[in-house]
Image (cartoon, rainbow, N blue to C red):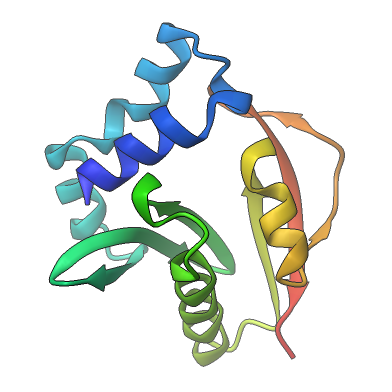
Length: 140
């Protein structure tokens, strides 16, 4: 899981971190194996993975009414893995009774989320390491 998170950030999100080493280091600091272990131990966070050929190729997480993580292995980008993982996260939120889900999108992922029915909310807001746009989706 750590490998996928770090590879996705470093290789796919250049539009967000602009190849700034400090931004990359800050963004990936909690994506180490230890950091992922802490995420898995967090009872408020539900982690999901997508696998192909017995290897993790995408990592996602939900908490409360929000999608918190959605990262794909660069080698599997554009293959439908992220779409399937997002659908599974939306289903997990529906099971919890969530009817309006939220997330903070990177510039890299914004068009993907739009294509999956997510709508931009607030204008770009400064995140911890990058700018993010709040988005929402009615889950009906």
